[in-house]
Amino acid sequence: MAKVAINLSTGALQQEEVIVGIDLGTTNSLVAYIHPEDRTPIAINDQGQGTIVPSVVHFTQTGETIVGTAAKDYLTTDPANTIYSVKRLLGKSYNDLGGHQDYFGYKVIDDNSEGLVKVRVQDKFYSPIELSAEILKELRERAEHALKTPVNRAVITVPAYFNDSQRQATRDAGKLAGLEVLRIVNEPTAAALAYGIGLDPEEEKTVAVYDLGGGTFDISILSIHQGIFEVLSTNGDTYLGGDDFDRAIINHWIQNNELIADTVNQDKHLSQELRLKAEEAKKTLSSQQVYAGTIDGKIDCHLERHTFETLIAPIVARTIESCRMAMADAKLQPEQIAAVIMVGGSTRVPMVYEAVSTFFGKQANNSLNPDEVVALGAAIQADILAGNRKDILLLDVTPLTLGIETMGGLMDSIIPRNSKVPTKAGRQYTTSIDGQVNMKISVYQGERDLVKENRKLAEFDLKGIPAMPAGFPKVDVNFILNADGILKVEAIELRSGTRQEVEVKPQYGLTDAQVEQMLLDSITHAREDVSTRMVIEARTTAEQMIYQVERFVEKNREHLTPDEIALTTANVQRLKEVLGTGDKDTILKAVDILEEQTSPFAERIMQISIKQAMAGKKIE
Ligand code: ADP
Ligand code: MG
Image (cartoon, rainbow, N blue to C red; front, side):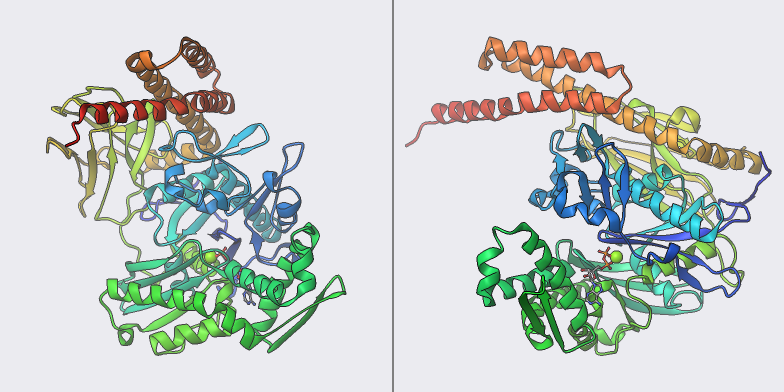
């Protein structure tokens, strides 16, 4: 293997190769890089296909994947095998989707409502991580093809409101796509960087980033000081965007054209055509006053800009209301905002631009392409991390990830590598067994998914957890890494206040060569690590399910019929048998069967206990 140098301040391997910036969007994704000669960011347009790659993955009958514009064509003809908006599912459990389950045209698995969602396509289960990885692979291939060089490293953007688990999922997706993810950057931060804001460490200002995409809207207020971007507040609506403009146009046409109204419900082709025409009309009206189109050369569908504006006014007003709330949360007045940055394809609508500029009392920045601005900023961030911008001060960062061991021997990262120090992060855990009174906290350092491949830093027992059923105790584990590189790990059980802590120096006894080797190993093993992790997660889900079901049957035997008990036992047995297969799809399918069969039980028992409680109560 070739000798590679490592930049210890960034943790990046220094090879002569590009680092790309990726905007992994809900509707569209893009990849950008810094042109080596003129040093400007450019969105990659491979083979003249355009810079935008629709975030759509289609599975063919033979199980192959198609990503992008070609996949988009299957949205209407083969919805069950065509996955869109997967970003909405990243790092989420089914419960997190709250009421929006019907939004998806494909099958989102709803068992194990606490666990991460899965998508079922034909006979296979895919995690949103795997699906996002398909999009990232496509972007990576386009970049490699266009730049004629291997692309192994990237900076990927996420919305400012993404939580830990969503950020970790994005990292994992990158890993699975064969990318070393140098940093996860907030989309509004990237947009500001693209406009050159925050590049000068002396600069101190507050900016607003208004991002209206296809199906999501968010507003972020950022404070920038000493090269640090701090999110003061965010607001928005994850189910509001340009698609709503399209729908408003379609409804308008249906209401005003009897021919369309009469046929639209019977004619699938027409409704699809209407959708395409509505988007075309909307885009045309961003630069012209009138749109005059026909469907199949027969049905007239025209629209004037002022009519369109009447249709969308309530939607635009909602986004402005969000801006107002974000400003109130940040405790700022519009005059205190130095710049307003427009992001997302839908900000091309002139009415949107006017409304935002009016609200903030200044002309918003829209000189850069709003589709590309996030990817361009990500490319700039990548360039900074590569150490190519000598003028920019790099802050101290931790070279290796710090985390703890969770079920199945998995590494749960708490402070990701490349985080600036000092830093603080934490996560909540619970017990897996009834009456558990001790919890072992094992602290590790490293990039591998299995703790046994990482470096153990410390271990301690949190004792004295009050005996409660599994899942009830709440244990906060906090990592506090100070500027001297000392890590304090504390664990607190919230109900009892039981607390334990330990201090270690993660870099102690670790040579540069070892850090380098650990990083190299993690890159070589990235893919197998992610697949192993997924099998372990499936197995953990299964083991917990078995534990719960067996305990349930034991307790409620009297309320179940002998047939139900027999079937449950058989399904549990079947699940136990497949546990050892190491095939996540087989395991998850068996979990699904057991879940479906037993889910009506819980409700029945609840009914019985409510009845008993009522019967026992004396009504006066
Ligand atoms: P996301 O960030 O959610 O992936 P984008 O920022 O790519 O989404 O925005 C996609 C949306 O922008 C779509 O609804 C699309 O119709 C809309 N859009 C693109 N170009 C225009 C335009 N010229 N005028 C109005 N809307 C546009
Ligand atoms: Mg976007």
